[in-house]
Length: 402
Ligand code: ADP
Image (tube, rainbow, N blue to C red; front, side):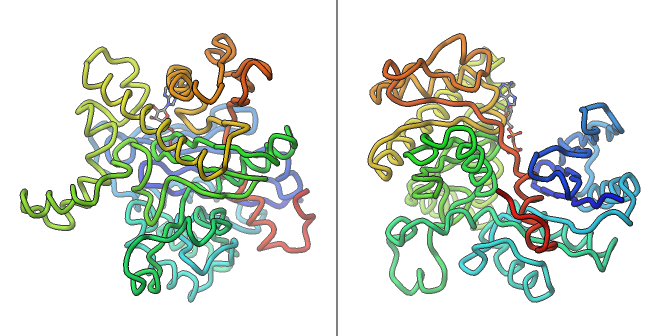
């Protein structure tokens, strides 16, 4: 009998899952996988088998407002009946915030869950959904080990100067510092790079995780040196609905001149800003790239400008750059965005091969020494990383990841 591990990534706009045979986790090969997308507008559930063949599909009527929790329960019921509970040995969860304490994946016991619940205010868009999935799974299978894998953990290698906020010390003493996020994605990419191009992996690399949420990570020898997200996942790049870095004075202005409450400002920054706010059309890059509306163009231009500007800052943190990796939905698929970012970074000696770029090739820069920085496109896989960690924590006698 084979044993399976379920990896759950319950985010705000989508819930993703993947099932793995414990024996073949390192290959990244999934037994099945799926996602619910369009949460909040038109939820759509799709599950596929290992070969990508459709297993099931369900669309809620457009405009249906289904609470996140009401989507989770049927999803988990489908998964557990699909795989059969007797084979499942552990569940791994993506947990966005591990705070100062959780620098490693951990078994989700009652005290750990209580600790993580306290961090909700630091990641209000994600943490409640992550923890809701943990509770739903506990209800369904109370005795199954559950493991929390943290997006902040990969950035624990950042130096104290990098993580410090320039606020009075009493605030840093209570945990106000830059944490960084998207760590599971960066850890996965760092591992793949080490396997595929060890010489580059040991150098200075910026990984651009450009999805609905977006950030950059500066890595040296596969370890996080700096990143664009900070105390919360609002900082840094322009995102689907999040503003990214903003003059703190602008927030005071909104409160003082517009009489906005703290929760109204929070909603504005997390849900109504970014690509959606600037374009007034959509948070979705594909839609904006397909639109001729000038506001869509302005939103895309701002997104690109900010990726390049933040990359400039990270290059300074690294003391130079050997490689640039594009990843996640936009990074993996939007050739026009990659070209525009690289054009802004041409001063570094980056030269793109336009054919390689438009075909989403693995290496999209021209060969060295023509391009002084190697530019790559790499698919990220947070669920695979969750599965690896979950096996290590829940089944410590299983073979370690090479
Ligand atoms: P999430 O953060 O929700 O996991 P993804 O990594 O799936 O997000 O990225 C979603 C983003 O990727 C959306 O803005 C979407 O429009 C964009 N995207 C996906 N495919 C393409 C494509 N072919 N061209 C341009 N943008 C794309």
